[in-house]
Each structure stands twice: as C-alpha cells, then as structure tokens.
Length: 401
Image (cartoon, rainbow, N blue to C red; front, side, top):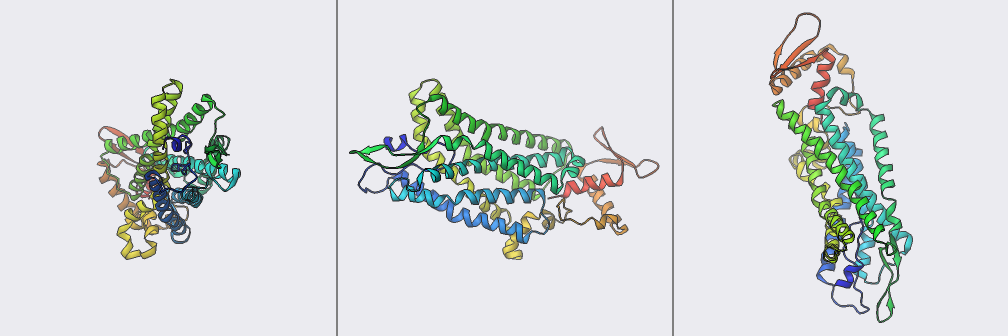
C-alpha cells in the first residue's frame, strides 16, 4: 500500500490511488474499490445531470438571469471534466497502467485543474453579484447587461486556463520498474526531484485556486448578511439559497484536498517526514472525494426545485432557475421586455411594489413636497431616492432572481 501511495495522484485532478504494482491480479484493495465506486457514481449521476442542467437552461428557461447563466457555465465545466472519468476507471480497474499516452495524461489532468479554477471563480462572480444587488443596487442594474456578463465569463475561462498551465509540466507518463524488473506506464506527478517545484505547485494551486477566491466569497456574503440584518430585511429569494448550496458543496469537497496540500508544503519546507508521509497517505482519499464536486450540483438543484417537479415535469429545473416565475417577482434577466415600463398601466404595480419594499425594510416613509422625489428614513439613516425610475430599479433589484 505504501508503494501505491508513493506514486498516487498528487495534483489537482481528483483521482483515486493508482493501480496495483504487482504483475499478478490479486483482488482489488479497499482503496481501489472505493476509488472506482466514487468515479462510477460521479460519472453516472454527474455527467447526465450536468447535461440536463445545460439543456434546461438553453431550451427551457425563457428569462435567463445572471445566476442562471453562471450555473450554465458551471454545469458545462463539470460535464467536460467528467468525460475523463472512463479513462481513469480503465486506469484503476484494468491494472495495466496508463495506456493512453503522454498527451492524454497531461491533457486530462490539465482539464481537471481548469475545472477547479472555473468553478471557484464562477462562485466568486455569483457572490459578487449578490453583494452588488444588496449594497449597490443601482450600480448592479447598470452592470447587468449581456455584454458585460459575456466579457466577465470570457475572462474567467481565460484565467482558469492560464492558472492551470503549470499542471502539464508537473505530470508525466513514466515507466518505473515496479516488481521483478517489470515496468508499467504510470501517469504520475513529476517534479524533477525538486522540493521547490513541489512547494510551488501545491501553494500556487491552493492559494490562487481556493484560499484567495474563497476569502473573497466569505467577505461578500458577510457584507450581504450584515447589510440585510441592519435593514431588518429578510430576503427569501431562491437565488440566495441556491448559491449558498453551491458554495457549501464546493467547500465541503475541496477543502480537505487543499488542507493536504498545505500539510505537504509544511512537511517539505520543514523536512518533516511525518507530515509529508501523512499528506501522501491522505492524498488519494481527498482527491477522490474532490472528484464528487463535479457531480453534486445537479443533485442540489433537484432537491432545491423538488416543489416544481409535479407541476412542471421536466421543466422543474427551469422553474427553479427562473426565480421570478416561481416567486412572482420581476427579473433582471436579459430577455426581459421593457415595454411595460413605458405603459401607464404599470403605475399600480410600481406603487404596490414600492409599498411592499417599504414594509419589508421597516422604513418610516415620509413624502416631501414637490416633484416625484421622495425621502425615506431607516432608523435614523436617511436614504435618498431621487426619481421614480430609481425606486423602480431598487424594487426590481430586490425581487430579481
């Protein structure tokens, strides 16, 4: 087992331990059985599940909000990385080594690393969008344009591919002598025997691929919670719950992996063999666990949208993503028509929405003389809203998604 772990997967791609290093065919170890089971579950549920999410957004959702489009990109990234699962299953179950060549070895691990980076930075964007909607509603409405979102999404994908570039350099298809002069091709980490290269890889992927972006996420949502509590405003939108589920799942499946990275870095820098060996022993299990992060989101969406299944059938996920349709609010989606805003028939709706918002916030409203201006006061804090259009924008921001 120790020899297996010494060449086990030690980079971002979440794979279980490597095949048996003996030429005979003994029963698979418990470690191998667990790894194969995780890969099978991830592929069977995750791949069709993510394709269903993509289909729902592209074919069923009529009003695609910001969160909806971010979920679409997240599902596409997860489906892409799950395509590599059959290769890794063959690698584990076949016990004949890596038979797909050096290019495939580097490529699939590179794509796994890209997936990790895309996922965390899409979640960052979701969190920032929520913070803007609460803290800067007018700025949020101005920024929520298709052109802006497409530019930001392109930047995230480019950044993810760039941050994953070290991966191919630290992965090789080697042929070590295993037992009785028998060699086997193994797709394994390779750092040229340099401690510095190992420390760089683990710190680079953990700091830029987890700790910094996750700190940003925590800051955003802490600010959102503080502002909503100070305003006595209980926001019950589906978008918030859905994003919090996605954040929680990502942290649950990826935090152990990055903690092992830090543990191994400490062991390498301090020449502490105990810590290094502990990290090596733990890595196959935490990397297998992290692989589930690509398959869990569709399951979360099913639970979150279960109330729509009986009524909407296969369109239940579209109803979930169209938070405004399911909650009766207005949406800041890109396909929304602006004709109603020019119609005089919307005045009662705007007035009703404003009254509802005022009651939610606990504002002590006070009309002022002249024009369409109005002022509102929140526990001694005076908030100016200078036009009906701004009031309408604030109401729309509150009810969106």
